[in-house]
Amino acid sequence: MINDFPRVRFAPSPTGYLHVGGLRTALYNYLFAKHNKGKFILRIEDTDRNRYVEGAVENLIAALKWCGLEYDEGPDIGGSFGPYMQSQRLEFYAHHAKDLIEKGYGYYCFCTPERLETLRNEQQKQKLPQAKYDKHCLHLSKEEVEKNLADGIAKVIRLNVEPNQKIIFDDIIRGRVEFDSNNVDDQVLIKSDGYPTYHLANVVDDHLMKITHVVRGEEWLSSTPKHILLYDFFNWEKPEFAHLPLLLNPDRSKLSKRQGDVAVEDYRAKGYLKEALVNFVALLGWNAGDDKEFYYMNELIEKFTLERVNKAGAVFDLDKLNWLNAEHLRKKSDEEILPVLKNEIQNSKLKIKNYEDEYLLKIISAMKERVSFVHEYLSKSPYFFEAPKEYEQSSIAKNWKEETPGQLKKLSDAFEKLNNPVKEDYENALANVAEELKVGKGKLIHPLRLAVSGMSTGPGMFDLIVILGKEETQKRILIAIERINH
Ligand code: GLU
Image 1 (cartoon, helix red, strand yellow):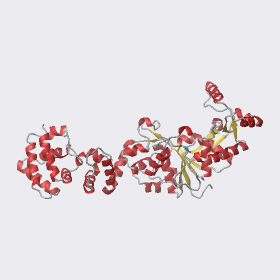
Image 2 (cartoon, rainbow, N blue to C red):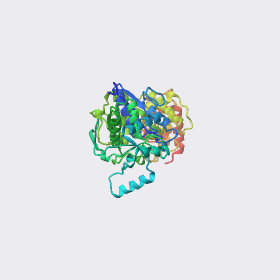
Image 3 (cartoon, protein in one colour):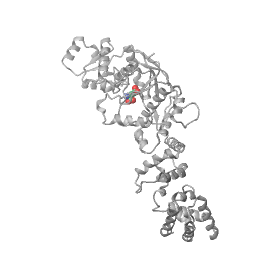
Image 4 (cartoon, rainbow, N blue to C red):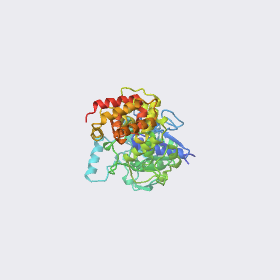
């Protein structure tokens, strides 16, 4: 057994942002580790120097932390199996590549890019299913190899794949998977710049870091036979494998940047709650066997098993994410929402930004059922923050009659007489004015809403004016009377 308790890893190549697919992989690893009292490790696979992006690792760590995926070992916190950045582990890969050469499972290849190009073109002409290296350098004599090495000729190290073999492994999600070694290329393990390729570094590190379960996206399934060969060649115990289903757009094409946001950072910037994003991503390929869809992280940890992950591609349904966001927002207490709203206000274009907590808490409570995002407190009820500059035309046409200004003036006068009014006081005052004018209450309520908010919908009318306060309400009534001509 590799280890008594599971040890799993999220092993991203830093691209500059955390893709939602990457978040799903990280989350499933995290949930699996927590559910089984194991360890969750972050390892940065940064051996492709051409892809180096400044700040990428920091962004990735920030996105994982924002989602609450705290790891037990990783580049910034260390651990007993470090370093956790592959670029700092080059000697391990060089050592193990040499070991393979000594055992005959790897060999130096000195072929020039031009020769490889010609080979590829020939194979394409022959319509072979995939281009494969022809093992030319495997047949060099020992002396030739020594001489080339001594002459400093550019070289790579390749995996020596034996033809006509079946490579078989059991995947926790897909069951038994079989590959034919004739379809496996003599993969480059160490590149000419001395850096390892993904395959070698991944296997060496999973072994040295005592990884018990490799949980990763389906796009890595076709690499697994190479990994299996490496484990066998090294005579190392293999971890278990679980390949997660692809993420699809609603049209079932592979989830791509072109059709919408794919970075966790994009969703964060758009105001999605981390709880909602994590909940949503957890359901991309997994369910607990019932129809429950609303989960907090602790419930996910309790319920998650790899056996319940589906094989079929998981469709990324933005409507569902929006719904979950609204649900998670509603379940938050007003006090929890307060700092988030304050942050939105600070980042907004509002002129006045310093509101009393008490005032904001009233708004939060009045609007809670009507918003799906915290920023909608500003966009759906801007009137709590600024007097209306415009009034909804359709509501003017429908509710603002010739007699309205006079009626609203009466209402304002009636409000004037109220001393520290509560909701019922406004209700009674309005009922009295309506009776006096011999009109239905609606004749006053609709134009009143329009005058104070500029809109025709919102929270209860009287809740709205209680929050705005008597003076502000009256002020807005008088301004509207002046400004609205129907
Ligand atoms: N570095 C690979 C990636 O970027 C890791 C795949 C794996 O988990 O083996 O996803």
